[in-house]
Amino acid sequence: MNLQNDLVFKNKIVVNDTTDGDSFSGSIKASGGISVTKGVYANSISLPGSTITGGSLLNISNSLINLNSFTKLGDNISIKMKKWTGIFPSSANNSVNISHGLDWTKIVSCNVYVNTTTGSIQPIIPPNFTITANLESQFQITSSDVVCFSNSNSANLFGCLVVVNVIYTS
Image 1: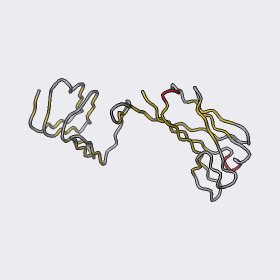
Image 2: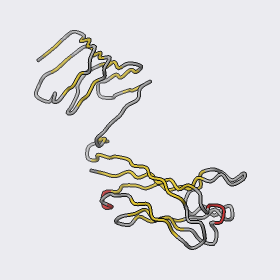
Image 3: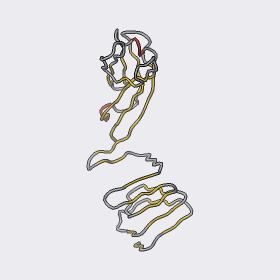
Image 4: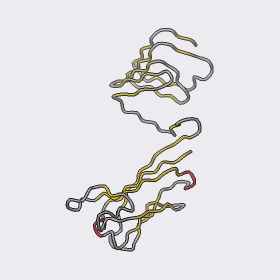
C-alpha cells in the first residue's frame, strides 16, 4: 500500500508492521491516538496537543508519550527505567533492602538518593556525601535488592525517604 495524501481518522490508528515495503508520504492525524507495535515511517504525525515530526530524527513537543516496552537507543541497546522508594534506616550502622525484582546482570545504572527535609539541608542527598556532617550514606546492588547503608555520619538522614532509579536492558 502506497499513499500520497493526508489521512485523517477520528479513532485510534493501530500499526502492526510497516517493514514489508508499504509506505506513506503525507501526514497522519488521529484524535484517538496512534499505536505502533513495529516500525513507523512518516514525515509528520499529529496527535492531540502535540507535534511529532520525522525523517531521520523525531522531534516531540507538547505531548505525553507512553512507551510500554523497551526503548532502543543507538544500534545495540534497549532500555527501561524503574523507580522505587523506601525509608532510610533509623539508626547508625544499619541497612534497608529495597527489592528490585530484576535480573541484576541486566542493570546498566542505578541512582540512589535520600530526600531529606531537615532544616536548611539540601533536599536531595547523593551517596558518599561527606562535605556536611551527618549526611553520609552508601548503597550496593545485590541479586535481589538495592541495599542502603547508614553509618555514624548519617544522623540527619535517619528515617528519610530513599529514592532508587534503575536503568536496565532487555
